[in-house]
Amino acid sequence: MTATGAAGSKFGPKILTSRFGLDQSWTLKSYLADNGYEGLRKALTLTPEDIQQSTLAASILGRGGAGFPAGRKWAMVRKAEPLYLVVNGDESEPATFKDHALMEGDPHQLIEGVLICAYAIGAAQAFIFVRGEMALAQERVQAALNEAYGYGAVGANILGSDFSIDVVVHPSAGAYIAGDETGMLESLEGKRAFPRIKPPNYPAAIGLYGAPTVVNNVETLSNLAWIMRNGSDAFQALGDGASRGTKLLSLSGHVRRPGNYEVEFAKVTFRELIYDPELGGGIRYDRQLKAFIPGGASSPWFGPQQLDIFMANEKVGEAGSMVGSGAITVMDETTCPVRAGWRITRFFHRESCGQCTPCREGSGWLEKIMRRIEDGQGREADLDLLMDVCDNISPGVRWPPAQTTICPLGPSIPSSIASGIRMFRDEFLDHVRDGHCPFPPDLLPASPAYA
Ligand SMILES: Cc1cc2nc3c(=O)[nH]c(=O)nc-3n(C[C@H](O)[C@H](O)[C@H](O)COP(=O)(O)O)c2cc1C
Ligand code: SF4
Image (cartoon, rainbow, N blue to C red):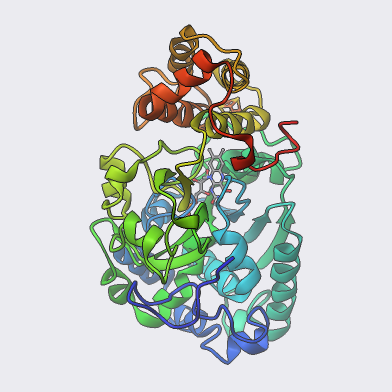
């Protein structure tokens, strides 16, 4: 797996990953040698309102999936005490692994961002919620936090100022749904990660323990130290339209060089990401591109005709999908679209929390129908049946999706199935007519889960 190097490239400067590759990049010693905590020092000379303004001006879209501007989110929070900051490091979307790298590679950068945000919004306490399975990330963030306490950057009278705050690392309960912001708050409160109904439970109004809460993603906050040091104009100068700064992209699937790549937001096309020798390096074994998932398992698929779209929230949205958390999965010509869709649907079925009938039941029905088509036991009418069940989960099966459920997991389920049927209808039908999957088994990876 490739990690982005320290220096910038023709694809833009490194804001988030500049320290990756430095010796012991996760330690305080290494961090202090490279501008560590200088952004916080500067922030503490400013008023919280100044920092809020600067974040608004930088125009940083949330990097957790929904793309809501961080500055606007902070401005919307109900003014009441206590007020909490919760950092979303759950990262359980299949093929998304950028927060994982940020927490392991540069945990002090995250902690500095947490402190800048906490100071700006007036938080009484901050929580960093780290995916349960990411043992090393938890260890590194906790060790960095201990070092930061020792250095005086966390705790009472931070860096000699009047600002005091405690930060707690909390391992997540190991479920995808614990990454939904309200599911995460339930989990932090010690309950099952059942998402809350909105309205009224918008975290900015009624969040952790009923108090107003800002929830931000790891990558979102990891930008703040750089913005404080370099100014919001420097951040705004990168990118285009609403998509500013850089974006850390997780590239996976059938490319030669899978890995995390930090690129200037809105300035790189999918073609560059997949084929440029400095990035994905092309399709493995010189095969042809069949399709790619542009923004995580929840997003509708794209095909070769969408390769020249720029990776910008608005551009990908206009084309009928989303950048989401920034996970791009490439499928070459040997990929069976039924099998790929089935695997994704199976994931959603297993991860559905079960509160909403369309999500709980619909995901199970879809998974079973996809499985029987893949096994060669499907019928032609199954294609309409699949679309009908999708329509019951998310009416119209359109993008952006209609939501009939408590959280967005439900309407995410149809994306892979509807994409597969719309793009590869004949291949679905071949499974039915041939009575087996037309893709030779030796081209498919062994799957204990499928056995
Ligand atoms: C099922 C589900 C899983 C999610 N998982 C994550 C996650 O792992 N990390 C994350 O930051 N956001 C995740 N989100 C989005 C969060 O609800 C929320 O929008 C985000 O943490 C806000 O941070 P941001 O504004 O900085 O992007 C998930 C949403 C849903 C519906
Ligand atoms: S949509 Fe699915 S995951 Fe979300 S609350 Fe409803 S049942 Fe749970």
